[in-house]
Image 1: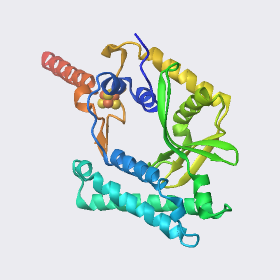
Image 2: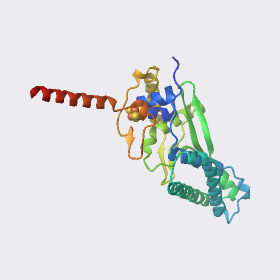
Image 3: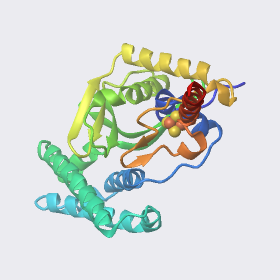
Image 4: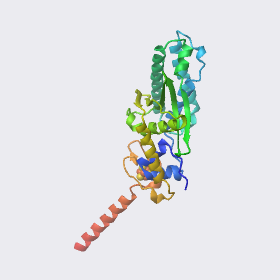
Length: 286
Ligand code: SF4
């Protein structure tokens, strides 16, 4: 069987729970939308659209206000366009407002950071804006390695190449995303025959974090990708064991495949069997 096309998300899913991988990537069962997914997609669109403005229209003295207004306008536009998806989430009105405001604050903080970077450069405001404009949503695919990814932003600054991914999560630990960044580095290397200098995450709630890219990082990605190919060569459900744990059910939700999977059924069955056995022993003893 040919290797499956993998991605950082599919590998992460397999590592969390092979059965979850099976339901999502082999059976292709539908997944539930969540506010975090919808909000993530809106935020990415805003950051993509931001760089499509005409920088010649930026005013040398007023650009900070103009750029922040651009972010606000884009967020309102994409939030409205996602109204159908958002209403399917069954959020209370208060929650809808809370998430909208939180997203606005994250994006304005990002815009502040961008304005401050612009302020450190020289030249006209249009030239500075262009020099900070990344390549966006770049699709990289390797048919040799059977892996692909969309790189949110590729920045070329002072002769350096940096690959960046945006995250709206509450965590601020780049280590959690090291595999994803390693895969991007590997894909970049295969296409351009050079490593990026740095790979990083822009945590929209906190700021950016970088790690240096080196051959070791690429080697780690290569090994992980090879490993997943070996483990997913078969289509049969028995090759994908369940990994019951905190990701099955948690205080604010449950795994998308909880009802299909019934992760604790075996334990519940055993518990009842043991109860029945104990009861029978008690009856016989009396
Ligand atoms: S419910 Fe738990 S065991 Fe089942 S697929 Fe989801 S994470 Fe895996």
